[in-house]
Length: 175
Image (tube, rainbow, N blue to C red; front, side, top):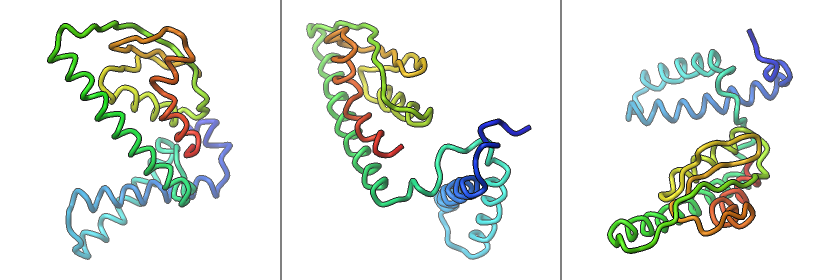
């Protein structure tokens, strides 16, 4: 039984999403097999095509437009910004662990996001969770609830700027 969402998609969009999934799965196949032997490649291409075809209802977040050069640039930019935030937060948490006298002020803050798609909200939630010191507890519509190891403010706008703004600005350009 097809979902209403998939029924609304045009054939071209479905085909584009199929090819995006297929390309991704071929890269995963080559990464796992770690060989460029012709029979391995042929089996991989056929098997990943079958999986992409059968899983089109499950994997429908991205299409070939994600491979546009501007989006690829923004994806690379997002990865760099995320890695910088990850390193900074790791040092902050390590400093707190090694110096127990440092004050911590744990709390839960909430803020609203401008992101529209569920996939982009998931990427933001995971980015927040993967940086030490913050944990996304829940996402309800456009509202994020985040546990913060050192709550600097409970004001939604200020907590948004501290936790999510740098990620969201780039994600809005990607999705």
